[in-house]
View 1 (cartoon, rainbow, N blue to C red):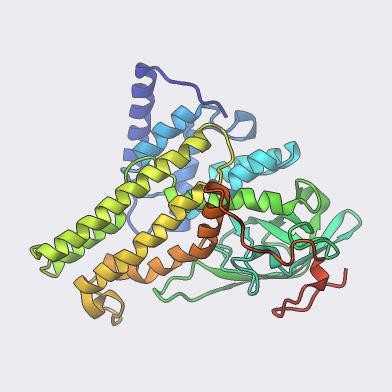
View 2 (view 1 turned 180 degrees about the vertical axis):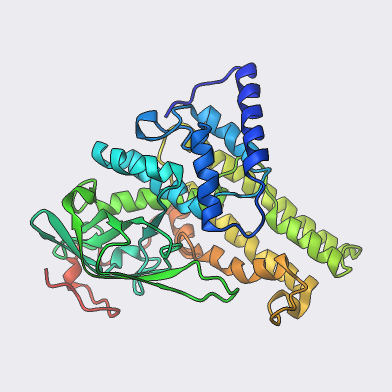
Length: 404
């Protein structure tokens, strides 16, 4: 990826090109279907506006990060026409581009960029959420294949995905962070079972995914054997940047906008106390956008995002806590409870029940604070008693230990 500086005329011309495309193709209604998302990306690929900073030989547009910045700025003013690809493009694509072999890039990237395939991240397990390194899923080498067994959970869009990036334990004789490897997995392969999870808001984006003797070609190993934790950490950094700052490079005030509409609908917009509280959300979201812009600078410089991505991620969760309190004052019971066919609070209600994930997805608030304290502020690390203990000797009660 290049970070070339564009001239004023080049910037203006490309911005106009992006805006013209978006005016034509990013106007579909809400909610958008998976087919709508794919249609938008297919059109972007034809127009040379998909995978803007990625190499042409791997299906990208071969342009610069300066072009990508303009594209994101213009895209932020239109409906989020490829929202279902936020993990696929925000996390999986940069991982394959940075750590994948040439053969993997040739096999996968063009289809990822054009939206022909959707990808998921398969990290969390029932007993390995914030402490992902305690994962129980195993990958055992069998000739030119790896055999996967285990379970993943909270996998977004797994029921729609074609492939995923998965981490599994490949050597239980090593400490828990050392014996992990990363694989590309075909989620339509024999032995893969996907079960959707019913969410409180009525959605079904999350899934449980079961693997029973699923065979993965050895060529699908990403990076080196037992080096998966380093790759997983990099992917989590991409995730926190995606969650904490989004894929836009503009100031965003989503909670503020919803509160304003909710206050007006409930007649609370004239209440000076309510107005003061809503303004606090505007200020907090402005600060979060500034943090996001700073974090995005690392990405624009062609670097894997660093621990600073946890700042935006944590700040987003703090804002969500404050937002829920204000929304409850404005909406009352209507902010958290409703009857079928009677949902007067609309977006406010949906955002309240969904906001709880902000403190969990991408790592809990506690994990983010540990990362910031350790890797950003340089504070002493918390004591660790299992750093050098072989995984098979750890007492983890959520599943049977591997004997490998």
